Length: 377
Image: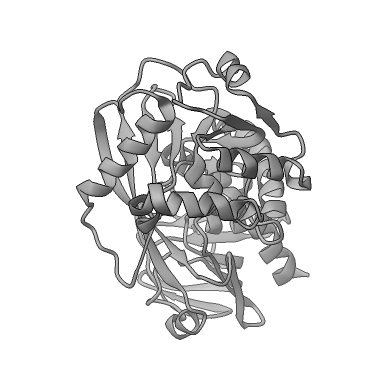
């Protein structure tokens, strides 16, 4: 993408991950002149290291679920216009224990469970024949989820924003100071009337004191890409561990019994923050994850034991050994214990924005709308 010759912008966005691109989209739809500044040559962190899973079912009722529903609708529109394939739809939550089935049934009775179905094992296998979970009690099926290939979707989104809306990009450019209408960068100053800073898990370059005061830390994940299993999944598959982790499930009274049993039977999985997600790519390979460790620094070294635990859970849910590993990697995102999103105003014309719960793909577009509406209304 070429560097623009425009010298003055209505909005400068710092960071070209999904949150930054979401803010750029919302601003461009208002016919604002937008510049995105990114220190890397392309997005390299959380936005492309994840599942590309727009997750609705089981999200926190107040802070995430309504935003995820809105973001899902925007994804469907943008994917069509930008040529981004929707590679999977729906979610299959395999309840391996009666306690898990009880959580799934209780969730289905809530307003968030609308249009979800609680399937018997026989009914689930008719619709998802390759789900061979031993001792399966029930499957909660949700039609709400979408999945894109994040490694392809995020770069494509950036190209489309430039082509469709004239959004300007300056890659490999670091921002050192923010004081609208001036932005100081490694390639010289930029003039912008307003600025949105979307630092991802960079907690030290811009506004480090604010981020520290807000209790923002970093979460590291381990993920795998497995060779094609020789079958096609109709949607993303998750398990009992998901029912114990996602707030929309875990906050239900019925989840107490499930957590108690998991502490006995899968304590090591819980220790490493593991909950299974199995997503299938267009080439048939499987993206499998993930673990969660809150750390102060970005540890680059993966632990084989965590990969073993992921593969064990895959076999327990899918009813067959995990295929060979094609690749593995560390994911990373900003995290906070008391919030899903951080939006602060260091000045009237500046916003600092982080999604602090690993749901950037799920709610980024909705957050972008909120931030731009607040900044320009």
